[in-house]
Image 1: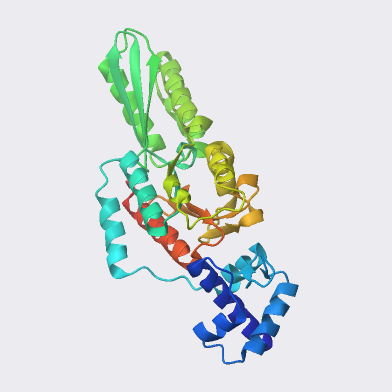
Image 2 (image 1 turned 180 degrees about the horizontal axis):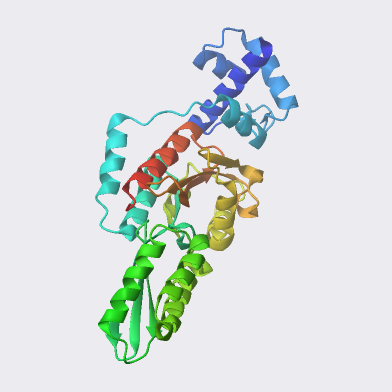
Length: 339
C-alpha cells in the first residue's frame, strides 16, 4: 500500500508542478489532493521518493520538483491519456480535411499540434522511400525531352526531366506509360526493381533503353536522402515565460536547427505501437536535455508509417494532454492523406 501511495504522491507532485511551475511541499499536497494520510506521512513518502531519485529539492527550504526519472515513471505507469473533447476532435478533422494539397496538410498539422500543446511542433513530409507509387506520367515537353512525373500514394509529386530519342512516337510512349503503371502501382521502392525489369523485357528491343532510363529516374527520385524534409512550427511558444529553461533558450533553438540530427532522433523514437516519449537527458541532443519529446508515426490509408510528427516542450509539460494531441493529429493525418 505504501508503494501505491508514494506513486500517488509522485503523480500529485508532477501535476502540481506542471500547473504552477513552483516546487511542491507536503502541506500543499495534503490540501489539494485527497491522499488520505497526514502531512507527516506525505513528508515520509516524499523523502522516499527523493532517495529513489524521483524528485529533488531545488533550493534549501523549498518544496520538491520531479526529476527526469520521476517524469519517466509518471509517463510509464501513472499518466492516463486525457481524451480530447468532441469539439476538439471535430475541429482537428475539419481543419485537416480542408487542406488543398500535401504541403497544406503538413503545415496545418504543425499548426494544430503547436496550438493544442502550446509547444513546438515537428512534422515530417511523407518519405518517398517509404511511400507507394500511385501513378507515373510521361509527358513530352520539347524535342528530345521527357518529363517524368512520380505521384505517390501519400500525395507527394516529384518531377524529373529525361533526354529521349527525338523520333519517339506517341504510341510507344503510351505503351511504356501503361506498362509502367500496371507493373508498379502501389509498390514500394524495395519492390519496384523487378517490376521495372519486367517492363523493359516486354518492350521492343529498340525501346528497352528508354524503359531502363525511366526506371532509373524514378528509382533515383524515390531514393534521394534530400527529400527527408520537416516543418517546424511554434518556436515562438518557447519564448513564453512559463517555459523557463535553466540553461536558457539558445541551446534548445540550436538543437532544433540541426534538422538532420533532429529527424534521426525522432525516427529512432518512433514506436509502431503508438506514441513514444523521450524525457530530458534521454534525448541524445544536448540542447534538448531540458525538454521532452512526444512522437508518433503517421501513415497512408493502408496503415503503413510513412513519416513522423512530434511535440517538443519543457520536461515540465502536460504529458497526458500532449500525448493525446499528438496521437489524435497523427490519426486524423493518416485518414486525410490521399489514398
